[in-house]
Length: 253
Image 1 (cartoon, rainbow, N blue to C red):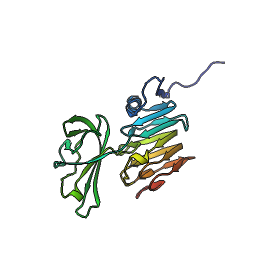
Image 2: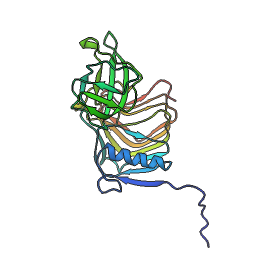
Image 3: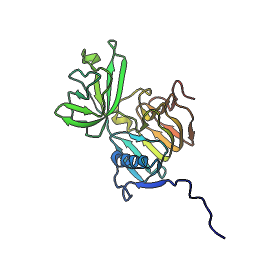
Image 4: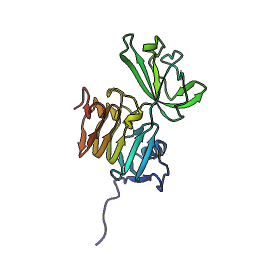
């Protein structure tokens, strides 16, 4: 009897990443390289091998991607967070910020700019990536499209090494994440509002499924998803996070 299976449907590549994997490494750069490689092929499975991965920036997810660990021994751990004031005004169209202390930042690392109102309330937040460091100037991947102007000591804007461990650009859809731990390293990071970050943070992303994912010790929300439809959690846990465990924001189905 002949094997008459169809070959008209595309297959999906599985790429192993981690120590001993097809793509070696134990940090966010290795994971992101794997995710980006699969995105070029229209999606696939990013198989993360056991280990603790140091996250100096978010893992940015793509359409039609499955991120799969091996359970509790696959840990994505956020790096220690540091905050420093901006010492020079940054306008919405500029690709750089000048900070008091550039030493905590790394090229390719995550950065969060925060601006405050005259009353001290958090007003503007921008998440981005540092692509160059020139003295006290940090060059950004994109324009902030917001103004950050130093004011009084109490309302001076800041730059911090704060970011979600997992995130996606707006409009990313059809993603599966399973069998891994998101460790927020709460003791070495300051609190951030769940409208801007969390161990997981999504905004205007749809059809995401999380299976057996643990979000723990994040100094903010565990799972935060804003204006998102069809987000499913199966046997997931949110443990010892500072704020909300699961935060389905306004506009989420």
